[in-house]
Image (cartoon, rainbow, N blue to C red):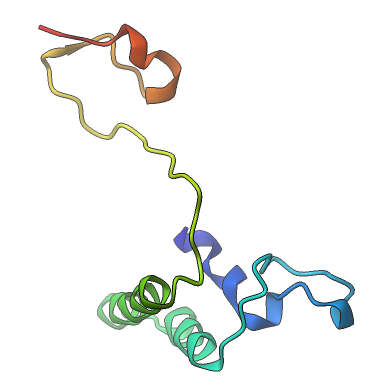
Length: 99
């Protein structure tokens, strides 16, 4: 998500006057949100960038301007008791067993 966060900016909204081009498919436009995105994208030091990202995520969860239908989960750690686990949990979750 963070890699595509810049696509949520109002300048990317798919509007008729722009020929319906852009990556902001929801067409959510809010100057306050744009300022938060600009602050995040312009921040270089990690602490400032994370603080700016917190503000972006707070706005997103408060205003629900992005509400996905599903989330794709990836296995990052698996207990050594789980047998047959692979890197992609959707490929063989039915084969997992616990010792």
